[in-house]
Each structure stands twice: as C-alpha cells, then as structure tokens.
Image: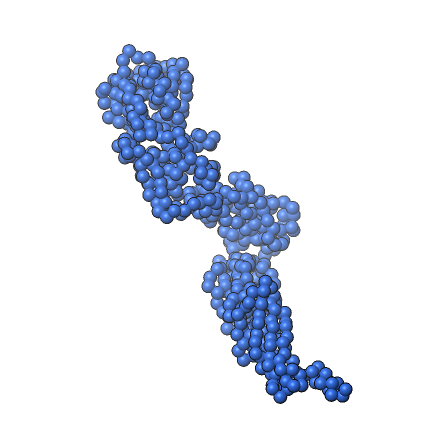
Length: 515
C-alpha cells in the first residue's frame, strides 16, 4: 500500500514535457531534468495534414511556410531515462494546441508632422515586411514599428502605400493593407488611388481615403460618377470609400469623373484650394485588338488566328487583351478578293476596312454611328466575343470605274455578283476618287443640292440611295444611257441594277471610286 502511494506521488511530481512561446521559432520545447529526451514530434494542421518541422536546440522550426493565425496540434513523445522507467514509465506523450502569431496594424490612417518619418505600428513585432508589392525584406530585429521609407515633407506631405508583413520569418505574408498619411491641416483632405488625372485601368478599383471619417464628411451621401457605370461604392474602413466597377469596368476610352458631395483638399497638392470634381482617363482599346475581334466575329473580309490557342471567356481577360493584344495572324477569307480591297488593309493601323466594319457594327447594334470605337462599342464587341456571336451575312464591296465606259461592280463573299454600266459626275462636279464607307441607306428619298450654275435642285422619289461621301450616293436614276459622266457627283444606275445593289450596301459598306 505504501509502495503504491509512493509510486503515485512520484508520477505526479516527475518533471514533464512542456511547450512554450518563442520570439522567432514556432515554439520552445521545455524539457526539465529527468524528463528524458524528445523522441518524436508530430505537428498537424486543423485539417489533419502533417506539417514538417525540425527540432533544433530545444526550438521547433517549421520546414515550410505557414499562414498567420493557423491552429496546429503538436504531439511530443519523450523517452525517459532507463533507470526511471520502472518508476514512472519509459515514455511520455503530451499534446498541445498552438496558433501561429498574427500581427495587426494599429491604424491605416496617419497624421504626420512635417519632417517626421512615416511609420506603421503593429500590435506585436514583425519580422518580414513587403512595401508596395516589392520583395519582402527581413528586419534585423523584429519590431512593432516599421518605417515606410518616407519623410513627410516636400512632395511627400501625403501618400499611400500597401504594406504586407509576417510576425515570423517562416510565415506567409499577410494580405496587403493600404496605409495612408496626411500632414495635419484644419480642413478635410483626400488621397486617391490612382491619383486624379492618372490613367485608370478599365476594371481597377477607385479608392478615396479621407483624413476624417466618411460618415463625418459625407454622411450617407456618396460621390456621383459619370459616365454612369454599373458598380457600387464600398466602405472599406471608417476613412476609405472604394468604387468597384461592374463586369465591363469603367469602359475603354472613357473619361471618368467623380463629383464629391463636399469640397476637400487634395493632399500633397500646393495651396489650400478645395475641390469637388476629380477625373481619370481610361485607356482606349488597341486598334490591333479591335481588328482581331472584328475579324473573328465576321465583320471583316479577313480571318484571324491566335498564335497560341486560347479562349477568352471572361470579361476581365477580354479587357486585358484589348490593351495588350495576343499574337496572331490575319488571312483573307476569299482567294479572289479584289486588289483594290486588299490594298486598303493595314493590320494594327487605322484603315478604311476597319472604319467601315466599325460603322456597320455600330449600326447593327443600335449605337451611334460615328466610326469611333468608344466605350459602348467595346462593351458590345466583348459581349459578342464571349457569347461567340458571329455575323454570318458575309462581306460586300463596291468599286466604280470612272474611266469610260463607266461601271459599278458589286463583289460579295468571293464572287462578282453584278457589273453594271453607271454614270459618275460631270467635269464640273466630278465623283471624288477614293474609298468611302456608306453612311446613310435609304430605300426611297428626296435628293437636293446645288447645280454647277448655282441653281438649286430637288428630286423626290429617288430609289435605292446609299450615301458614301458628302452628298454623293449610289442610286437609281432614269437616263437614256449609262456609262458616261452625267451626274452631279453621284453614281447613277439603272433601276434594276440599283435594286440589286441596294441590299448589299448597308451602312459601313466600302465604296471605291477609281479611274
């Protein structure tokens, strides 16, 4: 009975394994005298996955990066001295639950005196620091106060920078946090990202950070944004508002304007002038990418094939491609494309073929036909690309010979489908040479203008009109003969020929006048 009591007291009083905190390692293993020698260490994540570790000089080190705030289960097994095994057992096994440390930023908004260094404070020392997305650096000594490398003076009176940290050298960096600083002033100040007047990526978040709280400055009001853009304002913290545009972003080639409910001072700008209106410019989509999409969707007499096969099924990827086009190759769809049409093509550069396709696309999509691929057209074009909406009605081209006998030739989808005698302008009002897109398409209308002698004419009931340059148009007209200069600049056709040509010359169709 006495022996059993002594054994029980010995077991309770015998030195035991312990696990304690450490300034840098995952943990420190406490191994009192007579506790024995650590035989195995098993560390598991919350999901049960094994975490490789190494025990060096009583300190436990992870062999891979761990996340901050990660909960781990540590099981230590120690082998006791042989002479003590008969008394308290040959081994000891103990379990512990620990959490990897997490450093929290004390405040993301700083008021800094002129000439003072800008620093970020954390609730516990950090070991690794990354500023503005750059490669992380290890601090010589862990510190809870981290200099941001800026002195609040001159052009650096105010600013923002993203900072990511880890409390331990073996932890993964935290998500970046935006830290902003202002000099003390008696009026509200504002920092924006990006800065007003700078280029704004089409899908980038627009961030406004105020020196005072958003609620005290704006109440429940929110800035007004134009042009109207799908999306919403988010309150990121008490001092920061952010606008995240919707699926199609702000729109390529847009001037974005934000009007604030009240005037503020743009921090870092000279003077004390308050402002309410801020503007940014969204870059235009590239001409090359415009041509690639128009070709893929059937609006050009060319095909386009990417150098490396890819599928851009998301708006985000399409917006990126609009600014940085993928490599690829254009090719003519039809072997017998007229030489006049081939001569117009310039990949990556503005040209008549592209202009005509833009106008035709705008007309078919109910957009303003101005030949300029603006934000609305890019949005419609990207929508069609994602949906795989390909135009299947083919490609038409008209070329007119001014040399007598004068003629009009209609080419469509690789075939010359009509060649008809026609009349162009008389010497006093010649039809201008060049290539022009049809800009107005009227089945029956009134044509009016000025005769070479200064008198006016007004002809109602003109059939099958396709205007292509100023007041010049292809149309039907009653003449006793065709094939010589007789018009006032238009291309006149017999009624039957004009009726056949008209359905093939919608807005955007190219018309070439040549000798």
